[in-house]
Image 1 (cartoon, one colour):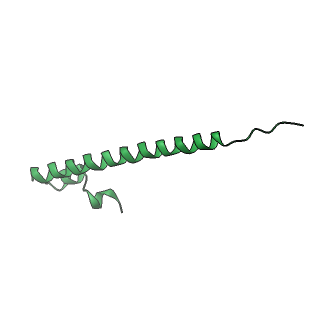
Image 2: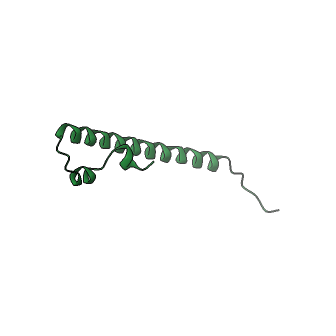
Length: 66
């Protein structure tokens, strides 16, 4: 589902003439919360990739030519 359906963008609010400042502040708070969740998800993804790479590199066996 597109984000505009979940949290209307500020541009849409300006186009329809939304003047309820409490609603706009609530939307800003939701956008900040979503941005923080995305940042944390990206951080956790990077940490997990680093762990997987470290585990993989640790378990590689070197082949010696005979």
